[in-house]
Amino acid sequence: MAKLTKKQKAAADMIDREKFYALDEAVEIIKSNAKSKFDETVEIAMNLGVDPRHADQMVRGVIQLPNGTGKSVRVAVFARGDKAEEAKKAGADLVGAEDLMEKIQGGEMNFDRCIATPDMMAVVGRLGKVLGPRGLMPNPKLGTVTPNVGEAVKAAKGGQVEFRAEKSGIVHAGLGKSSFTKEALSENIRAFVDAVAKSKPSGAKGTFIKKIAVSSTMGPGVKLEISDVI
Image (tube, rainbow, N blue to C red; front, top):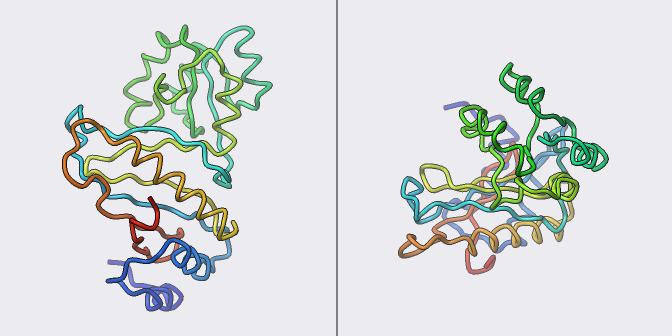
């Protein structure tokens, strides 16, 4: 286990590991502990009562955060003709068809979101083994397979966050920057938790949201009082 720096140890000492904090108090602690030279990302981890290996317990969705993420998102779009031009005007970073597929097959993966028009899925499908494991495969349920590519690009760049439960049933996401106001961070966290809560799958039994913790990139985790967030 890596040895904590003096700053990290001091930050950890401020937190009662056994306590579940109200959201506003937790956000204050996170902001006060984010003392790195860069603007730290505020992250959330939610332990869910699901086993994603079962199809009826998969948790996946998308949420437009009210205050954005503070992150610059690079978007790749599979489209042709007018739709390709629409994507470029909306701010897409990479736009193409077979040529884009070949670039990705060659190792060009410098993007965070992948969008496609429905007619391009035959091309995109050939990249399943590359995009799938990275959570980048376009999906109509998430709005990333759509004829409205311009709107999808703007949404991706404007604070839209995708989420998916990992094998262990944990959902991770970055929900803003430590430079955000306490109010903006709290709003984003509440919106995200609400979106995950509403995505409860039919196969989930018992308690769905078991634990929620928030932290900054370099800071310790702070456990949230779930009843104060939902």
